[in-house]
Image 1 (cartoon, one colour):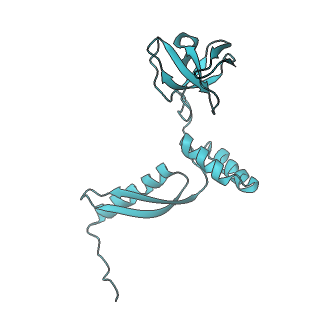
Image 2 (cartoon, one colour):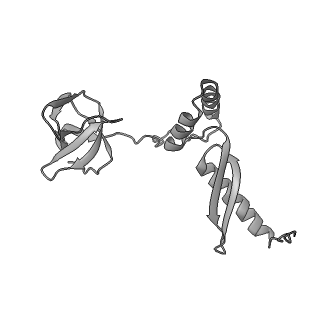
Length: 170
């Protein structure tokens, strides 16, 4: 039997129903439904709710299985989202988000999936090899890409030699 943790998502093996965790009644679910684990009981039962919210109900651990692939995880043999062959998909989706006024939602979705989103400003803090915290504001398609950009710039600067600091003007 699989080991589950609170907050994980599982998939129902078959259609069924579970008793409400608090209160009377039952909640039905379909085969293949994604359920979020809210807590784990010692008796081999799970407290779950439908993905996206809803009332908590009880199902047996044998009635569910792990999600085959985590959301945002590149399938084996899949193309990385930064690959130029699929970049057009994210560019078109970003333009559609702009047109439809869904920018914040699209940006949140891209960040959650770890995919390139619209080009926007990020403030990134990293530590140099000397232990100095460097904060930079950069334009990038994701926070991860912004961090990579800052780290590359920092390593190029370190390789070039010491940085001359400008004297503060009065």
